[in-house]
Image 1: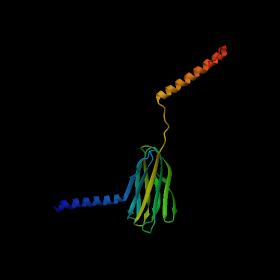
Image 2: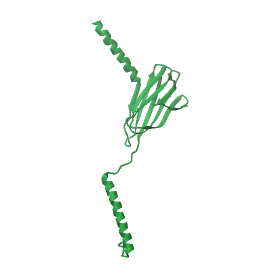
Image 3: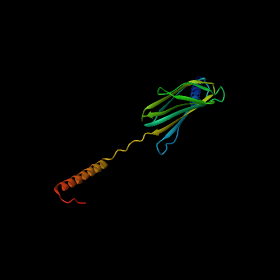
Image 4: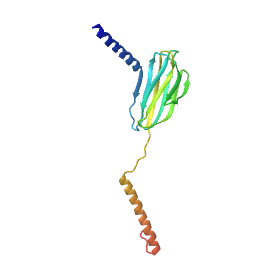
Length: 179
């Protein structure tokens, strides 16, 4: 009985540790607005290791996305020093105000079905956290007229041309022009 119980207990322990580690990393999708825009919040809370190497993948519709990542240092254990934050190889810009750090990448053009890979690397003090936000706005597409609309428009041009032609002919022959 012990021979069977030990491997099962070990498997549950590994699964529990993996679940606990994954539970700290989060991704939350916001509701879609009437204009098709939405936001995604993501991050990692209570990072207990000093090395930070997180990867997030996103698939967005066609449009534009803006990214921001923030971290706040309340003490040395919460501090994060980023070595790089990239989205598909493009480095984020960064800034700081007091103990708050922010990294951002604006105007990312997205194409429906493409996978975006966000990679965050740095070091933390052993109890660090960061949060990120993606705001997305779909690209407005121009309306394409229906075939019936095209036919109506072409017919209208033809009728206008026929009226102009008749008016010219009537003027050339000296006939009275109908008003």
